[in-house]
Length: 156
Image (cartoon, rainbow, N blue to C red; front, side, top):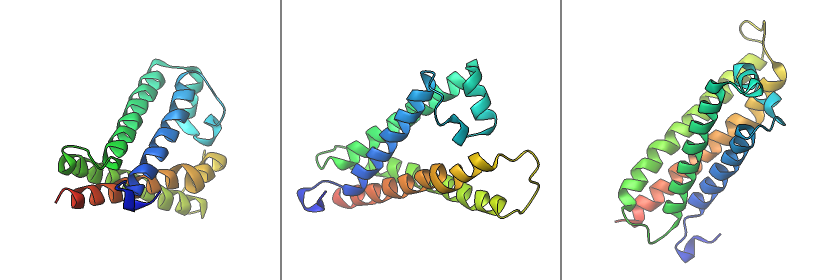
């Protein structure tokens, strides 16, 4: 998407990443199990057992992802009011997502390299985290932060 039409391409990318992530969460919340083995650990176990804790966590996660997607869409709209406030929220949220994803990629890569205790480690899920899930959060965060910076610049 061209930036010359007033749209914020980074915001559009952040919205797509947010809503795609929300769709996966919604699928698991509604009882789907495909792909749960790529998450692993307690999250996978709780989601498969459909515990109250898992359902609440998935619901909160879904709402957060949908909210982040709505924020990104607001940043993509050149006529958005309160652009500075939304830009500040996007910058904080984007930095948080990028930091979260980045730290987990590095920590997971260190674990995959064999550093530390490997007992009970789910190598399959860890690889999915290092090469897919955690980079997704990193890229989403960078896109949201860039969108926020652009939106704040446009607000003067």
